[in-house]
Image (cartoon, rainbow, N blue to C red):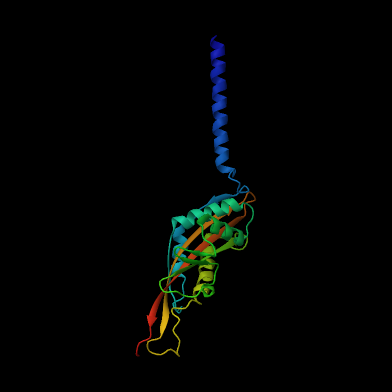
Length: 217
């Protein structure tokens, strides 16, 4: 009788260990349909700081970037859902779906891909652009290198931003729009089973238009 009891206890112990091992495997093997990728979040503050500090002083417009928990969650989920598809365009479309943002008018304004000029300014209206870029470890060997390149890429975009629609031919009393910009930024890294890592950087920039009138110089 005692032997049966010992055997039963031993079997229960083996089953418990097996269950724990199974639970542990589910957490690391990517059973969330992410193609075996392990997604980590290096820290949004690093990419936000890189974007804010990387803007050229000669740019006419300045974008104040902050972190966004919604963008963080959307980017991480998009990368997980994309699995082995490393195309940034795939991640961007997934973010559109996850956040409910698209090319159509919403309650807060318009969402565009990466060109504010596709939407005419309306007083008080916000226009938000969304972009995602990928940086593979085969080309960028460290997170620092990714941050530096991402900051340069965003600065190139901001360099073309207008601060207003005022022209030299306008007369006193004519109306124009003054623009202000704010942004969110996020970054995650997807490491595949082969050991290759791809960093994904997502950002949104929102342009707000305010109607102004030309006054005497």
